[in-house]
Image (cartoon, rainbow, N blue to C red; front, side, top):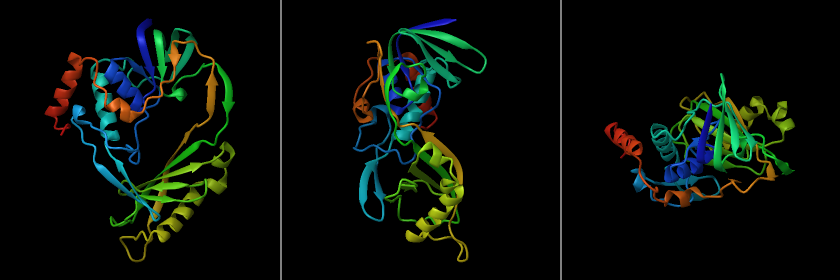
Length: 283
């Protein structure tokens, strides 16, 4: 079966979903790239069109205090819901692979079958969601390693949301959600598989962090405990491609896209908003 579209978006970043929503362009992706709790707007953004709030968030670390703004997670969920209901996510979240076949076709795969999808223009927001791109130059960079941890025996009075170091291993540790922590590291592939950067040393370094930040336990005889649950590796290599004019990588800031009004509001998009209103999910 062959599907044909005038424009097609690849990727599920917030920018990709915003562009798809504003311009009514179908979007395909392999992995859902939802914002994390510490992914915040750098400046205040008017989200009133989406009936969402952009509140001020203070990020306190032992060395400084910065101001950022919330709304990315709620906006992502809202856009994904509306696009799905409007039929603009044609393959839902079932894709296992996307490959460039020619200058105007891609091949998308699920666990059971594959389809050819034709396009006049392809906009790639997440390079890692598509393979088969003709790479002419690649500059290697250390990937971003995200370690997601559960935190036990921690008091709700922890004053800090961020702890930073000068080391590549656990360079930043975010405490944005109670009972959870996210560590950011920049490690080579060999380092990420080494015992010196394993869960054992993550827990050891985080105990040191807890002592430094005076993160107290609920219980006098227990220390705050960090339990690594998941590690995610994000490729940061810089690549140059030899692509035809109808395939591009849009460099559009989320803050800029949020200020653009949709070209037109489809019937299904209005239904999506009404459903969110009836469910009390849109303040």
